[in-house]
Every structure is written in C-alpha cells, then in structure tokens.
Length: 459
Image 1 (tube, helix red, strand yellow):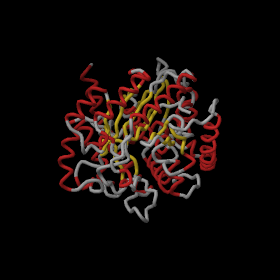
Image 2: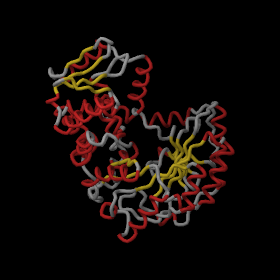
Image 3: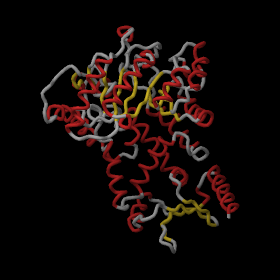
Image 4: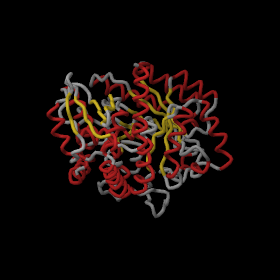
C-alpha cells in the first residue's frame, strides 16, 4: 500500500491553539493535549520499509509535520521522528517540511529547522490584521508577524476569502519583494456551504478580483504568483500553438497533461493520524471510503490488489465526470486539478462532481480575458518563459524554443483566428511569432522599449 508513497502528511496532533473560522476541523476540543507517539510513527516506518523493499523503491519521501498545529508537539518529539525516519530510510531519502500557523515559532524552532533542513511554510492570509481577523485576535497579530519572519519561512499559505479578496494580489507582491516569501493561494472551500460560511467566494469573484488583477500586474512583476500565471499561460499556449515538439518534450507534455486526471491521495499521498489511522489525505477524514487502514492492522493483501481496487473505485466516478465536462482538455486544468475530490464529495453528499460554480466559472472569465488581450498574453508568457523578444521597427518578434516543428506551429497558430499575428523563420531556422507593437498595452510597450534600450546598452 505504501510502495508509491511520495508525500506523508504527518498529523503530529489535531489540537490547535487557534480557532480559525474557516478551518475544516471544527472539533478541536476533542483533541486537546493529543500527540502522536513514537510507537505509532515507528509502526508506520516499519510498514513503509517493508513495502519499499518489496517493490525496490528508492525515491525520496517528503514528510510534512502537520496538524492541528504541529509545533504543539514540541521540538523533542519531532526530533525523535526525524531521527527514526533517517535511521530507517537514510538521511538522503527524507525531505522534511512543516506547515504551521507560526504563532509558537521562536529561536529554538529556527535552530531546529536549520539543523534538520526543515522547510517551514506558514499560514498567513495577509500583511495586516484586517486580512487575518478570521484567524487572530487583534493584539496577537503584530507579535506573530515578527516571530514568523525570524524563522525565515520558505513560503506561506493563504486562504482566499471575502475578507481578504480585494487585497490578496498586493499581499503576494508585498511578501515576495519585501521578505522573499512566495505565497501559495487556495480559495477557501467550506464543507457546510456558503449559507453557513459566508466567507466562501464565488467563481466570478475569484476571477475578477484575483486572477485578472494578477494577469494585469504580471507585466510589471513577472515573478508575482508565477506558479499560477505560468500554469494558466503555459497550458493555454501549449494547447493553442505547440503540438509537435522534440520526443523528450512530447513525453514531458503528455505527463503534464495526464498528471491531474487522477488524485494521488491514497497512493502517492498518505495522511497518518496520531491514533495510527491512515487516510488518503487530510481533507478526506470522515469519508469512510478514503480510510486506508491503520498501522496496527495487518491486512492480507500480498499484491496490493485490494488497495488498488479501492483507489480505482474512488477514481472512476470522477473520471466519468471529467470526461463529460471535458475537464481534461481545459486550459485551466493544471490550476484547479478538477477541484478537490474529497471536498466535492462532502459538499454534495457523496456525488462525484466538479465545483463548476467556482473553478469552471473562473476559468471561463479568464479565457475571455485571454481572447481580448491575446497580444499582451503572448508577451507576458514570453517574458515568464525567458523567450527572446525583439522589437524590429513597428513589429514585436517572439522567438520560440529551438527544434519546434515549424509547419505544426504555423498550423496550430490558425486556432487563434487573428490575421495580425504571423509566424516565420529567420535564416538560422529560428521560429518566431510577430505582431504589431501597437497591439500591446501601453505598459507592455514601455517595458519593451526599456528592454531594448538595456540590450543596446550592453552591445
């Protein structure tokens, strides 16, 4: 069952010192003082080691300390987990991470993270108290922000709600340029529905107040939420322009387009609870079909067929839905991953479906924006991908990667249905897309002029 494990969500405790209004774990009082014992972790490692040896797996495993709030477990306990895992698997076969609310971080935790190379990601919904009022009391936020920065986290996780929606783009920019912290953003999805939790946003709000401002700002700040922008832009233009690449790139592209079709929860991802229960992922707790057993159960499944059949039964209904809605050819598939299966089942009382009112509605608005601003999107994509961009008189030339099939690119370019965009080859057989500078927005024209001025200065 554990032979394909790549990411272990290690729930050190389900206890937490905060009471965030949007948290999907609403029964924290049941887990006060709960901690995972070393015996539970050792039993898991024994099972993992047996499965890895049986199937000769040698890939590294990422273990993420999670919660509740993992720092409530204390440094000594987490250190014993690290020592045990490295002893069983080898120090070079384990990658450590921790997702924390950051309220208990201090110099000791900073030393612990540095010593064990633990990548810390904090939960942070904004740069001021107003954006974090669903998480903190007012007088607690200032001290939290100072302590959080002291441990130099590698990233932050923000949940997008109506409370912080209008300021989230600036928050991402501020955290990156001021503190070099990349922010990953997820829309808050409440199991009980918007009627009970009015902070959940709609697809229109997600697109118009978050994705579209990101796209407009991207010309000035290419690194701004690049993981989101690149996903949208790359998927769109790979579909529209690139179809024939070198053999290696074709393989990479095929893997990328297929990777989102099936959720890896229960296979590549496992959630271990303090009581030894194994779940497909953290969000799936409460859905009995997603319970993968326990470290104390000795199920007889020598070839892994029972486990495989269980995963197959979970994946098949959603695969049918994906096929019906044509999600597998949607340009935004890499961003939404067809929504979270577990949350979708919880919100719809067991029906496998896609959150069309959230992800599909947002994707449609973004697609319309692409169509209206195709020249700026080509320019932004080229800058994000480090393509060579040259301005020749009144034309902009974007040079595509080497070894592209020229005829295939020219054929696929027709899908854009814009006669103002042309494709050609230079004397060195480099393929480029060309269009008039006038079609760019004023901001992008200024960036292009500045870029050309710098290039001429270097010559």
